[in-house]
Length: 406
Image (cartoon, rainbow, N blue to C red):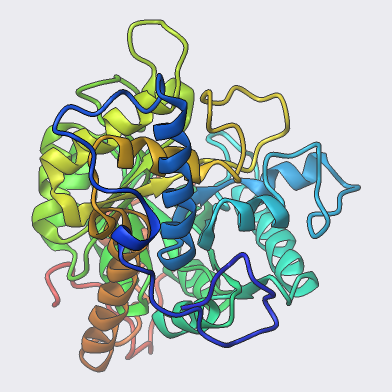
């Protein structure tokens, strides 16, 4: 395992993390002081957090830097960029080992495919310009290789459902460009009010390709049918617990329990509007409360982190988690609540990377049995309002569209 704080050119292993008894004082009494009110305890937890993240880095599920870069044409992310909350020094200081770079076009965008491709190009250019720090990841093997070399594994996605243009060919094109996650967001005729027959075909084609299905913000009818039909686990790329804070992106207890049963993962958002409580200032404590609630409902193997960074400096942020260097502060809070090293490792790295592997394995099992689908939304759902009737096609022996095909 590579220490993200060391020279990334070195590929030598850092070694195993020392036992806690050699790095920290003896265990505290049964009723320890509050780490926030006890500076020594807080410093100790923060030191432990940094050590743990060196061994078990963060695999983060959502960063919108691709969008922010359009508003910051002059930037230097390798040295540091004060106008943004994300740059290479802060990612490394935060212990980030893998990052999903979100490419979502906004609802109502007049050209969602064009906006998505622009953002994809920005992130691929960023990765190419920082080879000492970033590495494009297309598979679980790439994820492991990047970690072993001290680079930040960079996944492309999610893209929003409406950026497909109701086309399975567009989904395959995104996959060829490196996209590995698709958000089943409302706003398309096949994801709203629930998943249509064409939507089921999108799920099956995503399973065949090895594209993760993101259910953050999906309607209840869509997420239920997705989890019932998908051969691979799903994820929530930027959700928190709706039982604590009502927000369109947050997950109900029913969804969290279903994600756990299906083997997926909920990546808890740090966005203040998703975790605010009674109107008091939102802090790292509220994020920890949401993490523990998700863990309680979905299970310890089904919770991870989503910093939702990638914003301009000055955008609303949670106190204590203002930029991508702040993950140790959250881990320190959890350690102060009694989390073990194994529980932290599962939260930061193991749970999300397991889902990446499982989706890839499902694709390998599915691909030999299923050809690429050429079905159209008109084939399966009928005419779409605002679109011309398609011409009948003949002589297309590879065309498929049976919604009940395995």
